[in-house]
Image (cartoon, rainbow, N blue to C red; front, side, top):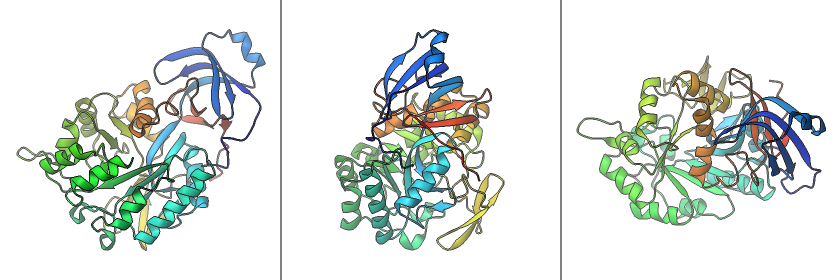
Length: 393
């Protein structure tokens, strides 16, 4: 995300916060001590007068930084078009302005060479300990053409040894793979899961039984619930029905008013156990930039307001940022601010198995947090104890 190195020595930084939501409860007058990007002390009963001795005073609401597991682009960059470290930095900087402190660069369906280039970029970013980057999301190419969306059909293919070797590399941080279970066997799903890969289901026309078999084999997530998957019907629950019924899996949702009706999302949140619905953006290059169009597989994608469409009419990702996702979840779905924040921070961290490091504000956690105004707009983003500068786009 930035050139912040988590191991670089720095002096102790102290921050006094008048109101802090740590991911579990609201606290008042909290003093944080930060060393090398982590919170080393947290005094939640600090008198207001101590604020004068701190390096920074924040009088607005502070909450955990956001975690986005599906980021295709930002800052005018599409990861598929430019799978390199500089692109990851640019995308992370663009989303950082909107409260995202951890993100998974997402490569959509492409050829093996492009996937390998993306893997090398992620490996280099992690080796350099780039703050905010914890892994990579491969959305495809093992999808169903019947539910491909804007994914290039010429690159959709069965899984092979080449992709299996790529997905199970041990230098990519946490790997997420979105696949269609009718095109990948339960044994291959188990192999991926046992190698540490998080398997998500999506872009699929699978029936209910096939989805349940994939869950039993180790799949634990659903990519942009409701979109590009077999719907729930009276006699065939489909992928949506399986996702809502299964209590152990996580579901990503895009709360932009275009991908899914607000009432449908409200029903999903009621159906799933608490903690199992997470906010994602599925963001494309216009986020954090002034661009109103870009190329995807050589074809134009046009921005109209806050909506992206291919010339053939399909939705082509989003221009949603995580700050907008949280605000929409509060204002459009009627979710409490605390729960909406958890859906963008704690719950994604739990999905990733990183909830002892990120997703909350507490001792030993990365000093990643956002500052809200009274309308839940993000006014500041802190990454590893450093306040990120605003972009000039």
